Amino acid sequence: MPKITPLKIGFVLDDTLDTTDGIQQYILTLGSWFVQQGHEVHYLVGESTRNDITNLHSMARNIKVRFNKNRLSIPLPTSKKLIAQKLADLDLDILHVQMPYSPMFAGRVISAAPSKTKIIGTFHIVMVSWLHNQGAHSLELMNRRTLKKFHKIVSVSPAAANFAKTVFGIDSAIVPNAVSLAAMEHKPIINEIPHIVFLGRLVERKGCSYLLSALQQLQSQYDGSYTVTIAGKGPLDEKLHSYVRKQGLKNITFTGFVSEKDKPKLLASADIAVFPSTGGESFGIVLIEAMAAGARVVLGGDNVGYQSVLSDHPDLLINARDTKSFANRIQYFLEHPAARTAAAVWAKDAVKQYDVAVVGKQIEQIYVA
Image 1: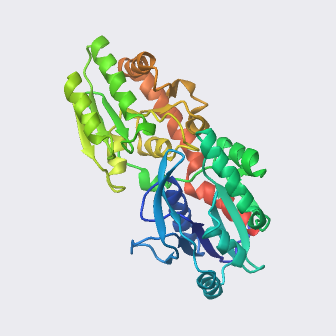
Image 2: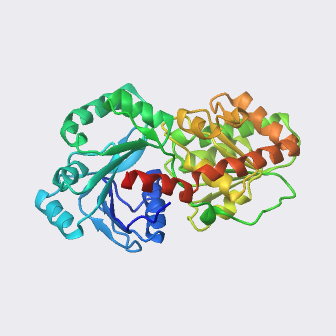
Image 3: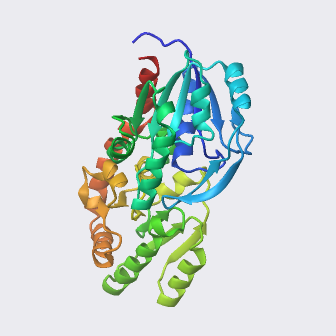
């Protein structure tokens, strides 16, 4: 394949780049890989204060909101003059817009983009309620004119592609989220006692409360040994601690927030990594990270996003709200080391398709097509 002429790429995101949520990870992982390939990468984003990212352009004032059972920030109207000047200065070949987007910032960037700049989009989300779906329809109406300027749109999963089609009328190819497998790789950690790990925000949607209910059931029916680590922070922190105390749950440790640096070690220590999200997931980056780090078993909530990762191994999908079956699934893997080994072998092979070197090449080919 002939070498691609270096491109000037601008990732566009309405939200802040100060958080480490899925979309932020997506553009930073791809952006880092593109720089390694010799391209020049810029991040045109909502209000951000971090100073550890080269070519980060904080171009909007943002306000924090809750939408689609997620916390995010949305931009206030951004100066069209400021946007036009920035685009003139950068002279980009590619604008890669994270979708859906606000007409107050990303929409204005798209409008101001010169004809020479190719506009690519990635859909990331699914709707979790009728009300959120109606909001998305309104957004489609406001962005109808700028949507016509896109050269190509992709979605990170079948669920996201279905959302793009049903709400925005857009046919999109599926190109999955990317993870740097090399960054997540960790030497194997062997435990004398099986270790169960939850990693995620302590909010209702991520399902930690259901995990604790399942562990209560497990404790009543299983007399084998295991340890549990709950890693993350959020508004349910005190409520979850209180539940553990009142129910007398044993061998559970809360670690609080875990940094990106420490995440691979934690996940590599998991004999069973559990992510019982009940919905609102368009993909499952954390599942891929756990698989890449070397968690033996990765259990995910049976939602449309996690299905796109685990559908080839359906016994790894759990109904988090069904406490009895949830506890039984954990118990099965605790009691069957061979099943843990088989799941790990499958994961080691399955995760390769999500490596940034694989996904990055697919996106790069879309840029130059």
